Every structure is written in structure tokens, then in C-alpha cells.
Image 1 (spheres, rainbow, N blue to C red):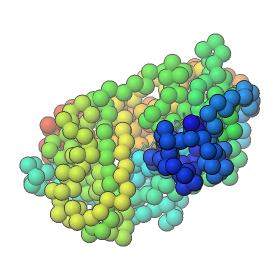
Image 2 (cartoon, helix red, strand yellow):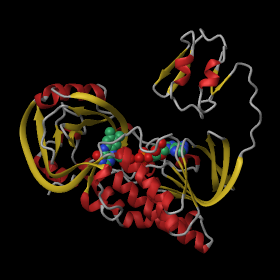
Image 3 (tube, helix red, strand yellow):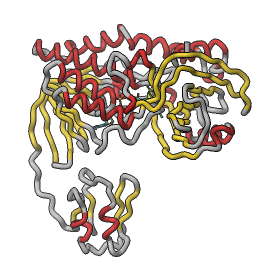
Image 4 (tube, rainbow, N blue to C red):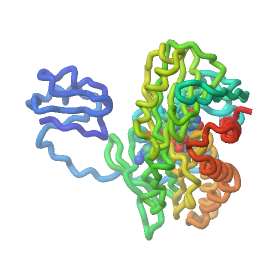
Length: 429
Ligand code: FAD
């Protein structure tokens, strides 16, 4: 029976089309081959990337390709791309690794960012902005009915992250970083417990990349930190399980971001409706993983059904994901390694927003890496400057927001006091 080389498969479906016995099924990003396969080999010829092999095919030993850089960044989300961009701008040789074949896709985000926080990084561009919001509204829902509303203002954007993330990686490349897609970091090169590089697997085979500093920006599913001995484990209490539809065919104010709180809507979390322009919106919610008796997706379905304006829309995209909403990690560095963004759990515990935090951390980490490399000292002690700078600024705010989240238990998150705190956190002044 034909086998799939998963590192190479681009999930294009060309093989499915030529199979004479219907033995191949493309299940989104998995290629399934069933026992009807009789090894005719037509699919091997149709595959554009050589991702299929015949039964009995002997893998020849592939010698890992060896390379060396100043900095290797794992993960091309906003945190990783800004780290790579900044490090390259500072004159370092940089490799940015991304396991997906298309940077920015699939999206795992509601795509909301505040204008003031984005500006220090990149000039807003209509190519990656779906809507500009100037208003916010928080509604309290009790037993299906809206019992209170709070309105505010504040300039922000709903991004098109599919484009935004790629533009950040393009900026990194323009600054001189080398970018490799469909290349997964699978481990670290360690010497006496100190990180000396990355082991990876790409379409061309295995890689061993030596470097002075690894920046782990590998998102909520991060493994880079644990590989270096850092404890990044998330409790259910500090995890928001999220589901979101991009709804088309709805009528909403395209300049307003809507938030809905209430235990029946999203236990321990909230629902959001963020405009995407032209009768579309990201409609989603996050539930605290230890509280919910049902899946986030089922909560979302019920929420949409309860809102006549939304119920008339059609879902054209489903987004699911987990958001880390714990207190700041005590350690973000090890010898030769720094963690940024979701990998470092740097998300705002009150709002679940993490895009600009990841970008800020990426920039700080790159600056500290450049200093450490110039001084010839990339030990944990030298890189701890990054932790200090993070905790002196945005990290301190995140610690405060975690304390506020803990101060108001899930049942108190519809109180006027909590709504005031929440309004400040979402930037609705
Ligand atoms: P990511 O954007 O997750 O990027 C990590 C990258 O690393 C990915 O591209 C991944 O493929 C890659 N990667 C992982 N492992 C490897 C590996 N081993 N080798 C190579 N590459 C690897 N934040 C906001 O600010 N506003 C919002 O409105 C908002 N809404 C959200 C809604 C939902 C449903 C969810 C789930 C999250 C939301 N967030 C929001 C959070 C936000 O998406 C994240 O905080 C942000 O993407 C973090 O950026 P990052 O660069 O740290 O990680």
C-alpha cells in the first residue's frame, strides 16, 4: 500500500483525482489511504512534491543538513516574525522556521488590536485591515436577555491575520532573515544543558542548525520551552477554550466591537462580535476550560441562535483554539534560549489578547540577543535581562490583570466593578 511522507505532503489532492479505485481521501490536512489501494503508483506520478512512496520503499539515511546562524526563531506568528525582523535589523544572521506551509493560515484569532499598541511596530495598511473600530459595547446577558449595556470608545483594528502575519514575515525577510516554511523544529541541540541550536524537519529532510540564541515563538502549542527544561504547563483554569465563526450576511455596525458577558453565554469568559466589513464579523467566544460543562463550539451555536441579528448569518470559516490566560511565567529564558508570545504565556489574562504582547516580547528578545551575542555571553544570566525588561513593562500589567481576574470570580464577572475593569482592559475608554 502507498505511504504518505507527512513532512512533504502539501494536501493538494492531486493524488485523489488520479486514484482509479478511490483509495485516497484528503481529510483537510491529512491524507488517508485505505486498503483498496493496489499499488498502481499513479498517485506517485501526480504528486507535485514527492510525498508518496510505494510499499517496501527503503528510506536511505539522510544526513542532516548543518547550518549556523546567530539566532534561530521557531514559529512565524507575530512574536517570531517581529523577533526575526528586529534581530536582522540589528545585523544578526537569522533563520525563521515555520511548520505551516502558509504563514498566517489557518487563523486562530479574533484579530482585534488597539491602534496605540500596534503603531510602534508597523504602519496600518488597508491590505491587512478588515475594519477600523472606534466604539466598543459590553452587554450583560442573564437568562438569554440583555440586562445592562456599557458603551465606550477607542481606536482599534480588526486585522486580516492571514495577510498580516505574512507581511511581518516578509518584513523579516526584507531585513535579511532567512525564512523557511513547512519546516518543523523537532528538538534542540543541547551541550551541558545549554541550548546550542535546533533540530528540524523540512521537505528537503532533517536539519541541524547551530546558533548562539534560539527564540521560541511557537505559540500555545509550544514545545521549545519544555525541551529546554522550562515549565510552561497550563492548568485548565488558566486556559480559555475558544470557538469562532466568520459570519457573512449579517447587519452590524462595522465601527463597533461588541462583547457579551454572562455565565450562560461563556462561563469564565466572554463572547465577541468583531466587525470584518461588508456584512461580516468574527463571532466567537472563550470559556474557562475547567468551568464549562459543554464545548465552546456548542456555547457558540447557542449564543448565535439567541441573537436574531447574528442568527441570520452564515458561517464561512470556523476557527478554534486555546488561549493561555495564566500569571506571567517565573522563567522565560534558559542558557541560549528565550521564549516569546503565547509560548511564554504572555497573553492578557483579562481579555485573551496576545498579538501585540507577542510582538513587543519578540522585539525585546531580539534586542537582548543582539547585546548578549556582542558581549559573547548568551548564558541564562545574560539573557535574564529580557525577563527583567518584560516584567518592568508589559509583564507587570499582565500580572496585575491576572490578580484582577482572580479577584473577580467567574460568577462576579457581570458586576459593575468588573465591567469597569474589563472596559479598561479592552481599551474602551
Ligand atoms: P502564534 O501566532 O500562535 O504563532 C506561533 C507559530 O509557531 C505558528 O505559526 C505555528 O505554526 C508555529 N510553530 C509551532 N510549533 C512549531 C514548530 N515546532 N516548528 C516551527 N513552527 C512552529 N489576540 C489578540 O490580540 N486579539 C484578539 O482578538 C485575539 N483573539 C483570539 C481568538 C482566538 C480564538 C484565539 C485562539 C486567540 C486569540 N488571540 C487574540 C490570541 C492571539 O492569537 C495570540 O496571542 C497570538 O497569535 C500570539 O502570537 P505568537 O506569535 O506568540 O504565536
